[in-house]
Image (cartoon, rainbow, N blue to C red):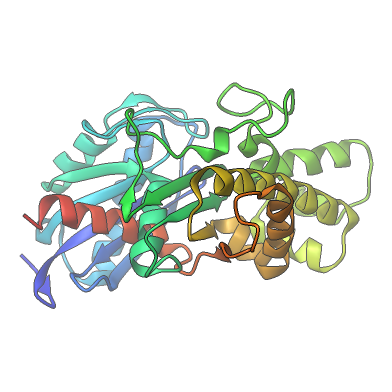
Length: 328
């Protein structure tokens, strides 16, 4: 079995609604090889597993190791999940129900696999290695195709009695608002995610409101890339600016509410939208959060951008695999 800096290799996988990322991670938390594939989200569990294995094999090839040299693996997956059995119960952004993603990957790799909520994995990565390093009480929110959260109190992930706590994307922030992929209306995910912004832009296009995003989305089958959105905002496109401000407002309200309830030392905001839109967008989020926050009258609690980028959930999943299976 391959070892680097005193420990065996593990694989971390970030399974998202749009893309799958995989990394071969050394004992010192360096990523030795990476893989990236599009998620066949509508095609069901077996197709998603196949794409995940291709992604893992790409990472292994880049690292110059084989499947048999991997000691363990971790998956960060959208939920809700049965984390004990490694089963995706269902997902708002993927066509899966009661799919045993953990056991299937374990059988393919010949190594034990732990399955954790994708955003909880990302939040844990940021807590140990990124923007949350050195703090004990951290709230993380990741904004991308959907929205998820991770709550860490006194250095431990808060999973709750169901092991699925932290689903901040499905807190209702606009009663009677847009329908969410989970079936409810007015969830944070339904108003502040990239999917929600794309839906609002599409409505503007339908109303014949001029926007540079119309052509960009048309070329990509109606999909909105975070980078395209950021470019449109930088160019002052009125539709893009309006929808980004709206999304940031509701996200800030939700984060402010979490600060009131949990009183963390720091709030870490990550995901593709946060990466693309950068500090100006984060300042909009902060401003909205300040309006909502009552439990921090002196403004001590920081709201910062995540620092690990796309590696957060890969590293977090790998960390949890190593801790669960290899540190006994």
